[in-house]
Length: 533
Ligand code: GLU
Image 1: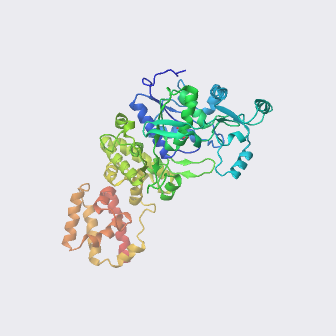
Image 2: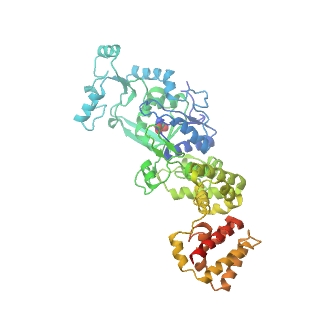
Image 3: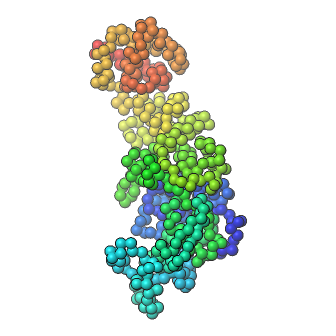
């Protein structure tokens, strides 16, 4: 055993230890990310340990989901159930089967730090009815059914006849537990306020509290990064460490602050995200038991680089204050000293800004690769919404030049698809029977109609179609010669092109559609207008 290892020269080994009870909240993912950044910065090892000792809350697919998130985000584990290293197995249920926890619980029982408790759940529920603040512990244990209140012979008889029991930790009275958190400094806890937690359940499975301590030790974990919701459990973990392994080998604790709701009032929840329509998981998740759907960043059109960059900075500030950081730069600059001590507010607009910046950066770094990513993403998305996919239109729209010219207007990859749908509406060809449009047509003077036809002639005769400045000059000249203002003609022109009266710049639309498509659409519109005026 490594109990004598010197803490100073200990290799960095960190773990992400999810319980497979569902998808992964971005708060959990950020914990994983910080573990990863710290491990890589210190030439250390990142472990995935599946804490599946609670069979009632086990959800099939939750582990596979974490592996999928890891692959998508590039936050790769060095050791995991799929990539076993020297510390296998990496699932606690399998570790239990190997008998890893047995010797340790025996040690605690032998030294009197743990004890058997035979109370049934009904009996405990009755206690709670009598005492609303009931805690199994220092003040109550003597009056309950356990090996501290019974004669040893009775305990033996009960065990021999197969009575169900749990094993609890005997919280010492009147002690102050001092925990040194690398982020928060020293924190003290009074044992009199803590209860006697269950270490082994009545099905023989270890609880989280017991297994986490044994496994962190067994797996040589040097630093524990986890959410601050585990802080109240930390004194128990410290006591268990001391009892089982002494304090020398205890890992360094880092309890990370929460991610707050957008308004800063409380922890960001799945419900908040659903209400406000933003993703809260890295990847879409459908709960296999309830069929409840939770939206992911990936399917909302986020690049993994932007997602991890946004989340890393939601709780950590690199020393140079720059915001757009590739993973390697984050690794090089990562340190516990720059992790925030206070909780950060989630801001979806900021997340989109990161994605926007990353898309622009990708376009500069490797335009070809980026345009392929956009094409693939949009094809997959559109095929899922079958009626929006048309291969010919896709080929026409998703050209590298168009993607590059659109990137400055896009915040998520889905925005490219929205533009596509705008340029190639589902009900293509555009219907010119829109009420608003027909109303406008009533006001269309003969002269405007003439100008529209002249615009058509000018565009169809245009040699330099790709030069939008040239196009703009030609059309402005034409309008000037007829004393017609943009606002009198552009809504008609825009509607002819994309079925919208307002919004996008005409010259930009024309450039994206190209000469043939633009002229065809104007021609169709002119045909319909002629019928009406
Ligand atoms: N299994 C715990 C969880 O689901 C791990 C907590 C810890 O990192 O100690 O979050």
